[in-house]
Length: 126
Image (cartoon, rainbow, N blue to C red; front, side):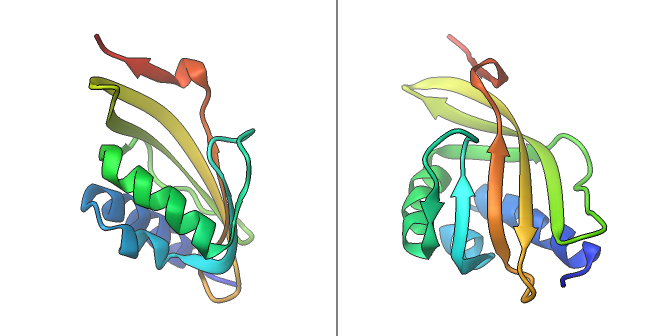
């Protein structure tokens, strides 16, 4: 099982990868059989092929991500982070407040990711 420090470092690399617009560094954090749900309630994306398709689109449109609080570990194989995403939505600035919860496999790679945000967590500026 990965340590709390390893999980926190992986989540920081996730943020850093988005901010560098480096999809490969984001994808390298995931296990080949990982599952993501972004946002929670959306169809699941299973396996690195579907996850890569999702992140190739996401990393392009995200202008920046900023942590809203320190990354949190756990007594198990999960970690969470609260952050703000800045992007353009239909040509307008948009801010989404998100909490991601990720579990990790024994190799320290992300096994599951759930993104918690809803319609009222997204603000589109005119």
